Image 1 (cartoon, rainbow, N blue to C red):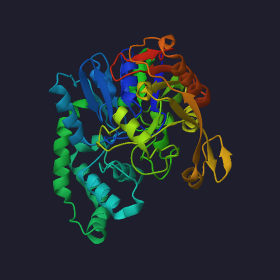
Image 2 (image 1 turned 180 degrees about the horizontal axis):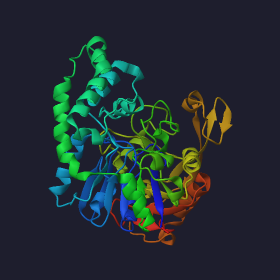
Image 3 (image 1 turned 180 degrees about the vertical axis):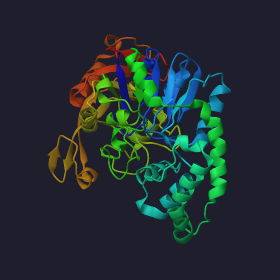
Amino acid sequence: MPGIVLIGAQWGDEGKGKATDLIGTKVDYVARFNGGNNAGHTVVVGDESYALHLLPSGIISPNVTPVIGNGVVVDPEVLFEEIDGLESRGVDCSRLLVSEAAHVIAPYHRTLDKVTERFLGKHKIGTTGRGIGPAYADKINRVGIRVHDLFNAKHLRDKVEASLHQKNLMLVKLYNRRAVDVDQTTDELLALGERLKPYVANTSLVLNKALDEGKNVLFEGGQATMLDVDHGTYPFVTSSNPTAGGACTGTGVGPTRINRVIGVAKAYITRVGEGPFPTELFDESGDWLREQGHEYGVTTGRPRRCGWADTVVNRYAARVNGLTDIVLTKLDVLTGLKEIPICVAYDVDGERHDEMPTDQAAFTAAKPIYETMPGWTEDISTCHSFDELPATCQAYVKRLEELSGCRISAIGTGPQRDHIIQINSLID
């Protein structure tokens, strides 16, 4: 039975939650494999809308086991807030499993994130200030705190002390802030660990056994391809690997267990935070897309930068992730436009680039080369098959598919759960 990876094919906010929910009724496990509560996605079920940040989308489906893998950085306070919020609305969160090897976002990670971003000034990255970057930095520097560390008081205090030794010097000497107290921090983390303990498991073992038993496992990535720390628009990226390869390292499941890799892409494109964005619109067209698409961050509320579809980005995502399918979302947002531009290549200092420039300076200088497709005015939210879409809408989708180099297997036609057209099955 399949292991399915679902990732964002652009800069995030593509509608992964809806795509996960579409597949989630047919899977047994949904596992988050990267990022932290800097991610955000919305799942709409009937008249109910659920904004999720750290929890996997499968938490909404009663027959799914949601898993937070070892590649995720977990802020226990945020996790409990999210669990409490869902349970107050009748959602059972008792099925949740959290990897014992996942790293913990401590209060001092949030402090460092905020003060260092302010210190960078005009060179800021545009982080959410939630401590994700500093927690991953500690992981790489081998001074991080894992979930299983929260259950041993002496061991935890030693790790907190080691982690804060250099950080306190920076906070006091460089940023003119108060030092963080080791004992107070240890006590806070131990208390959080007590509540977290019932959810903790060896999730790598759980997921591999599930696949051995013929269960379906969906691996859900936070953020998106262009924010990957290795393959994105570095340094304006996240601190983890939201590309398909991160599903394996972030859950402890080998690549031979993966059968499908599904990329989610909007019918246009957005990004949040700093960094280059070739098709970004600074005129009324950008404002129109933002309002029509309700393009404001689920986690931060920040307005998203908006632009026309960029098939150079889509082709790149298809290649580095090995995409087998694309779920195209928010096609309905484009309804009412007379013409719709599609970026097919870049102009970099007078030279045409059909593929993503690997040089960051070249990508920053890239100007979009557009071709224009006719738009449509009909309401497509009532369409239940591809053939029911207006002819010009069909042509737009087919052109995106051709230029992206990967088949489009599902199309989002509105915000509701049933506003989707499935062309090809997303699960074998």
